[in-house]
Image 1 (cartoon, helix red, strand yellow):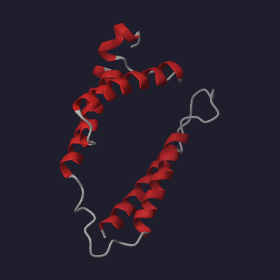
Image 2: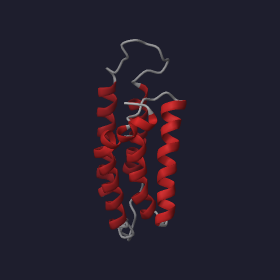
Image 3: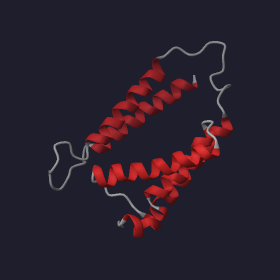
Image 4: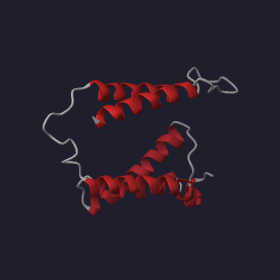
Amino acid sequence: MSDRILGAACIVASAGMAWSAQGYAAAISYEPVGPRAFPMLLAGLLAIGGLWLFARPALRGASPYRAVPLRATLLAGAAIAVYAALFELLGFTLATAAMAVPLGLVFGGSLKQALAAGAGLGVTLYFLFDKALDVVLPTGVLSFLLGGR
């Protein structure tokens, strides 16, 4: 029954997202897609997921939450919350690396692998988004090295 409640909540949330995104428009239209496309895409995906949760048959005789690793889930959620809090201060590169380390450990990697993956993700994604795709990202404490804001 809780899957259906979550599915219904997702459908309502997606309708609210789609309704609020209707007014999104760029002051100067320089791109064919504009700012409305991404929230509408997310609202559509959320609605599809909500419909799937609402319509699928319930699991019979088994608790769907029995195998959920609660500690790992809480650690991953905390890592993402800390990432959001430190994003501007540390900058994209360091915040992403700092978030990737505990997530790597949660998914079974060693500390050495998690540190390497975190550093690689932070640097690679920064250069991909900021330099190749021209998406301005905060550089934080590394602004002297990366030359940004």
